[in-house]
Amino acid sequence: MLELLNTRVMLARFPGKGGWTYAPVGLLPEAPKTYFGVLKVRARVDELTLEGVTLMPMGQGRRFLPINAALRKQLGKQAGDEVQLQLFLLEEEAALEHISLADFTECLAEVPAALRVFQGLGKERQLAWLRWIDEVEEDAQKVARVEAAMAQLAQGKQQPG
Image (cartoon, rainbow, N blue to C red; front, top):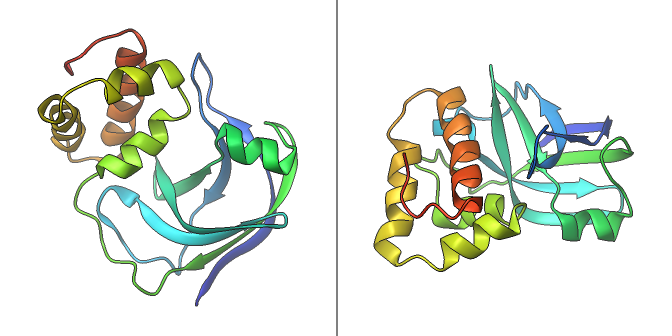
């Protein structure tokens, strides 16, 4: 397994209500190019090993590892705290063409109100949100759409746009 990163990082939080807490990863020269910049890795955060977690794009080739509430509780850490971050490329990693339902649901877990609304939707409406995110080409636009989707769902909106 190829080690992509081994460093100390400070946990950060995206601004605004429902902003994700994350470990900034930055550029990974050894990582394969993937559609949308999403990359599955094995991560070690302090003493916790996480199998098959998703690095998300931040734009300009940089990535971040979302650190959800359950993981923050296990670590006893919040935004502003330092962690030791080690990342390994999974051998079966292949380029992704679209954001998956599982990855989007994982993102929504950071905003429980959005997750509840999304889970209450029928399969067709859930897929409509994923198609809306995927219809733009630029990584930065997709990240913006994920953030917009989370905000809209948290407000109870059932259709994207």
